[in-house]
Image (cartoon, rainbow, N blue to C red; front, side, top):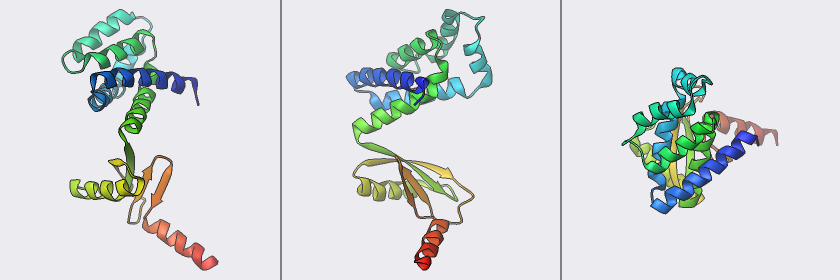
Length: 179
């Protein structure tokens, strides 16, 4: 595990504890996701934040102006701390760690569902229900389109892969013939 990941986990844990005290863990996760996406998805913003020629105070004044009123003070304070300490490179790891900590504490599992087409809301709910019963947790579905699948779906929950794809079924069938 890299040093940045360890540092990101510490920031995420502190943010989670602050959010839990306010009873806003899921809202904080949504706000942090929006902030990290906004700050890391645009190269110009990242270059601005990473620029050594601009003081951290000036950077923060500009960024906070765009965040004020849109996010809780808890998230704003955490972002300010990360930016002031020049650790913008850990934002995505921090978000990932926060999501894991929050999900574990609330009994939620994140499932990445690979399909050949986008699942509608009803299909996502069905997948969440079936796999929730299987792992005894509430499931949050993230649907990823994988054009390489021939059919069916793959579901990844934590470190476990549930392969219901056509290619996976054919592979298991081939193995059974070899026995």
